[in-house]
Image 1 (cartoon, rainbow, N blue to C red):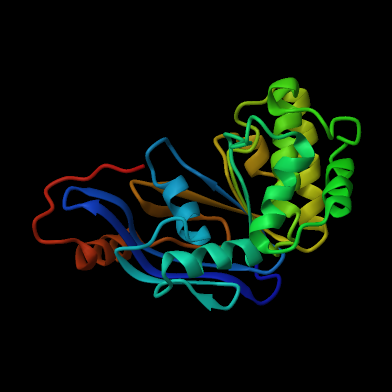
Image 2 (image 1 turned 135 degrees about the horizontal axis):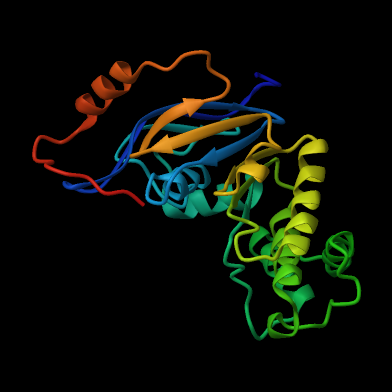
Length: 250
C-alpha cells in the first residue's frame, strides 16, 4: 500500500561479491514515506545486503538506488557518509557502542560527525528511551536492552526520516524486545519510514508490508497481488556474468 511519496527506490539492483557469489539479483523495490516494511527470509538470502544497499554501506554491481531523493549510485565514500548522517538512522543487532565512553558520550558521537554537538539534545534523546538515570554508565554497566536503547537514541539524534534496523531485538529477551519494538513503533507513528530485517514473524506482522527474500531475489511482497517467477529468472539471467557457475549469499 502506497502511503506517500517514494522514499526508497531500487531499480534492477544486483550485487556480486565475485564471479561466483551473487548476493542480490535484479531487485526492483519502491518504499513510500511512512511505510513500515519488514524484510524476512532464511539466513543467507540477502536481507542484510539489501539493507546495506539502502544505507550506502554497500554499493551495487549494477542497477540504481535512490534514497530520499538522492541517487546513491555515483557517490563516493565521503558523500555516502555525509548522506547517511543527514538522512538515515541505523539500528544494528550488535550495538557498536564505544566501550570507554558513557551512554551520553556515545550518543554525542553521532552529533560530532554531523557537525553539531548538543549535550542537552543528547540527554533528552536518552531520557526518551527511559535512560535518564543511565547517562554516565558505560556500555559494560548497561544491560543488553539498555545498550540497544542507547543505539536507538544515537540513530535518532540527527532526526533522520528513514530508519533501517537489522535484527534490532535479536539479542534481547522478550521483555526488552517488547520495549525496543514499542519505541520503534512510535517512530513510525511519527511519520518516519522504517525498513526492518527480522527472523521474528510476530515482529514482521506488525508492519504494513512484508517482503520475503529467497536466494537474493524477492520471492513475495505483500503489497503485490501476483508474482511472476519467470520474470525474476529472466531478470537474473540478464544480470549474471558469463563466468558464474554458482552462487552464495549473505
